[in-house]
Length: 345
Image: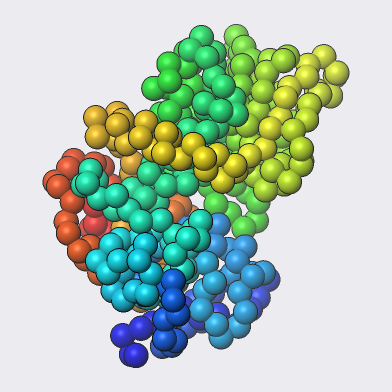
């Protein structure tokens, strides 16, 4: 059992998170029940979104309850999850996870295209579906239109931008991303950038915008969108509200606001991923990744993401994949302040 490990929360604080609040502990795995399978995790995706779970949804001295992971089935009592298959799941920060067949957060990976498994965390996973749905279904962008991408988390912001460009959108203004910061300075920097954009000489309003800003800051984006335009938003505070209209302070413009989740478009997943996969194979979409080896580095990576040392999110590799994908020339992103010794493509 010593080979089965998990990250536990040893102490809780609502101030700055510190490494001593976490610990690596043995993981006890109960005998499998019918319909269950044991996964030996290969990759964990560690991002800033886990902070909410760490602070509010994680009981002390228990395994991390959720978090994207990719692993190989090593024992199974489920016909749909045969031994040797690779799955994407949301089982948290552990070397091994018990998954249940039929759950929406457990997906068997189709490896026939031999693309890197880690693309399941980005273009071939929820971020890819979210980007595709935002461009094609929520905003329904047209080729002659202009799009603003603001406060977009990585990698979704890049995927929204590339999907819009490949869809033929006339002009995409991106790069107004939101650096992670517990003090809210990330949002402040985005708002400053939006204000500077509006002040540019010859500025013309956009036809549509995609953003992850909270509902109380949507007016800053709406000020840059033309009358009758629309905004797609993925922040939980916006998703929780029904679609509505955003009126400017002067009352001269009205913009449609629609919050959405990738899960709302799960029925279009196969269509979206086929579209995205084709562009990945053709090198028109090139995901950027940061990878750190070693399960023992999960906490360091998480805290590094929160402090801005790493670009969110980071992939932690626990072991080698069962079959190496075909060689490819995708670009890996290495953040400032790190070395090649600790990060692999």
